[in-house]
Length: 272
Image 1 (cartoon, helix red, strand yellow):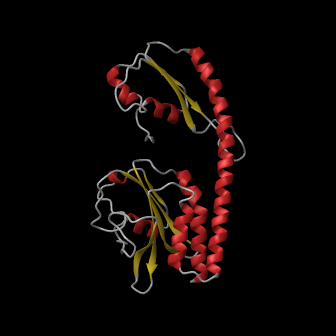
Image 2 (cartoon, rainbow, N blue to C red):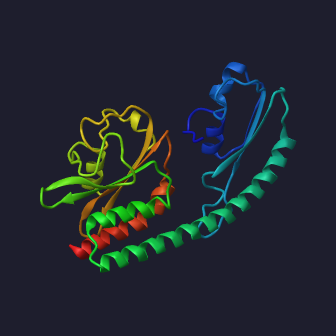
Image 3 (spheres, rainbow, N blue to C red):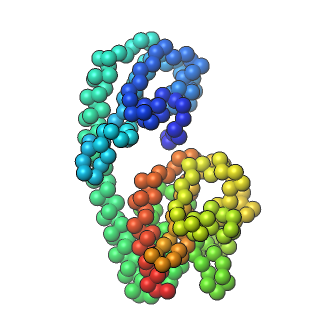
């Protein structure tokens, strides 16, 4: 499960970067204070400590934000004290070392995937592959980097002078390939105009939100990430990712996707 930051204890530890001990906790307060429970459980004591990545030249030091929170709780009152904090602090340091190792391996794996995708796209471009086919391949390769329920590429239709959906990961319920987007009112249109990416934790929280075109039927919560397809000269369109549930994407996801999307912008620029 993913959790948005709120007024709960886990968020407090994550945002402040300081350990928290609380006891007693009333049954009525459990659901509000402990976000990892979906109903009011019998919890009387809580302790949470932040986990930081070890400082390196490329990784944030312990003075920056935590990357995780280590939590234990108990059904008894006053279960934890300073001794508990010292023990958890040691576990926190051990976890941080493991996370650093995993993160480095994950970054290398993603870098390899991006380089492989760039090589494949470059070969397609040399063969004179069209924009639609490049867009379809972009969706294929980005799906290997970031998990998304839907991926949609919008490009400019020179013949009709309209911004249209040219490729999708799957058939969405209320948008299809060939759909003209609302350039002036949609989020995708805003991304293309501003040439800045947009990350929305919950599209349902956006007042009168229009993802692609007016008249959409947004019936549930969902995360939305849209990245412009740019070269140094112009914006050729955008790729949008959607995921059911809130907080489905992060800035780290956008950072992983950016080099590949930017390369496609360069390909379009060279071929135009």
